[in-house]
Image (cartoon, rainbow, N blue to C red; front, side, top):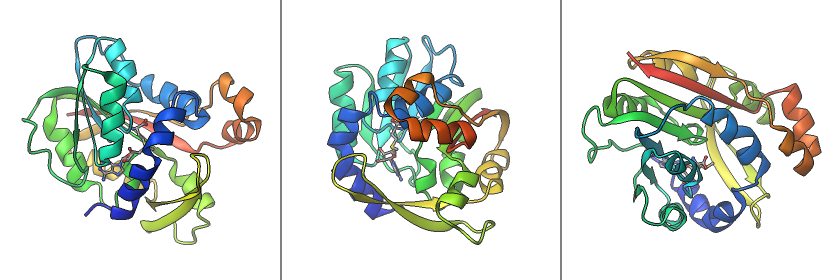
Length: 236
Ligand SMILES: C[S@@+](CC[C@H](N)C(=O)[O-])C[C@H]1O[C@@H](n2cnc3c(N)ncnc32)[C@H](O)[C@@H]1O
């Protein structure tokens, strides 16, 4: 079951998220460049952007002549994704926790899921669906919060457990509670390798230089310890 609290939070955040996403350091100069580095040669290829938010990834991929389909469970995010991408791409409201019944088997060359899987308690159905809709040898590219970062950040004492955690974000206007699930490294990898993928590449990213100009403190921290992890998994 999806988390109604996080859906409500993202509906509330959507306007400022869409406005700030262009240069928000953790997105623009940390997550996006490192994740997009794993998503090469998309020209004339089909990409499913799962949990697409306001469609910034989709915009970049469309500019590289990819065919993009995006979904998100926040209807507000989907409104901005459509606005941002005008008549290009296809965007619809859908929950990662539900089967992608509207998509046929082996439809996509790539599935991208950036900074969203940590909101789910259980990845199993979602990863199985990503596998089903990918063509043979298709690639799943994900970025998530790094499990070691989360373990420290949430001051966990039970590494091996998947636990509900929450924090307050202040970078998008009014402070807002964000609920997610922290899990051990094994539980980030096993859902992929046990559902028909092999891990082709795992990146512990470093921020780009542009990050430093906007946020020196986090630039220094991210050069000392990763906050995110990017993975490319290939359908066997
Ligand atoms: C941090 S944002 C990332 C958005 C986009 N992928 C990006 O990187 O620009 C997380 C997104 O995940 C979406 N999300 C969270 N849980 C979801 C779920 N169960 N189903 C679909 N979307 C979900 C949120 O609505 C939000 O748009």
